[in-house]
Length: 225
Length: 225
DNA sequence: CTATAAACTTAGCCCCATCTAATTTCGCTC
DNA sequence: GAGCGAAATTAGATGGGGCTAAGTTTATAG
Ligand SMILES: [Mn+2]
Ligand SMILES: [Mn+2]
Ligand SMILES: [Mn+2]
Ligand SMILES: [Mn+2]
Image (cartoon, rainbow over all chains, first blue to last red; front, side, top):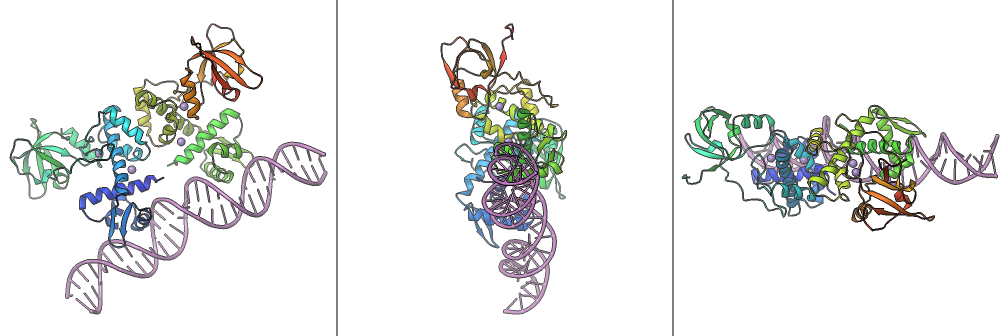
């Protein structure tokens, strides 16, 4: 019906659209998918023909109402799989991404629904990303605040960490940082280093600001904004 | 590395070779894979180039020592998945085949090993077919006796049923016939009908002889051969 | 031993997803 | 508003997997 590759393109558009909030440009796309630009152009034309995206040459693409649910379904599969792998099959959270990235295209929705049920229909994946429901509702956009936005002394709860880099994930979990962890910002430097103290530990965890900028946080309830 | 389709070809050769015990012919192959003969010829040449099969034009193919373990790995994946789906994800044994037939190519061996572990390293799949071990040992060939070989009055244990036809599987399980069930042969007719009485029930289950011929059986222990 | 039908392979085409090289368009600066 | 570099598209090739139609080879019958 729809190739695994096309599904990956649609998923990518969804992500990139979400991040930049505008049409996704060929170059952005090519970099994200790790292919050359002409490959993107040609695929995008096929997707437009099948009405999954609006494509305006030289202007980029947007998902159509036909394309969105397809992207969401794949994302649902991906995140459910990640959750299942970590909870039921003893995978480390650093390892799940690649396995899920392949399997997401090959499991049936029946399979997805069954594992969701087994897990008690979880709301988020191991990295804190929201899991679309079976009828493809996505939870409201997260706060948008990141570790990089915090002042020294501030205490926040980790909401979501990026899931593509296994090394980063291993580093984070080794230092006690996972979604729901509460951390205090102990230092920020002019040269782009953020240092944290995870809840109740004495450990200091340093992160480059680029990383801090993609780890989202929740303000602690009861505290002022 | 190796496409899902190539894997399916290798798996098919393994099956067909096992059944007929000789070189697998292009026509047999084409029918089994549901493709035209030229497609088989061309794929077989690619497999031969990569040394997975010995191919002699006009004479058919045999798996090489390189090809056998690949086929076995896929078969292991397939049967473990079937087992996992029925035992852990509430699939009916009639539904598992298609899901397993896709996923077998996309799960890692890590995934396979984990589900095997969860299941306690089962020896057979839900249809009674042996599951190759992690180091790809296959249990000795089954008895070879089938329901069609039995005399009226004989009692045997069902060993293995064909897993491709959901309707047949549904029919069998509805009538209490699964691997390990003990049945008595109550009637065989000249026009190819075999009637069974599953263990302890009063029900009569009729099967066409073609079907009886592919359901394998074990002689009950203690009984004479 | 020859004729013929069945089985198999070859030739030549198609669609998919990708690439490099060449060309066009965009968007900005002066 | 002309010129220029960056971004995007078009052109043309490649490899995977499939198909139909046309030729070969093999097996079998007479
Ligand atoms: Mn993917
Ligand atoms: Mn994730
Ligand atoms: Mn398969
Ligand atoms: Mn089976």
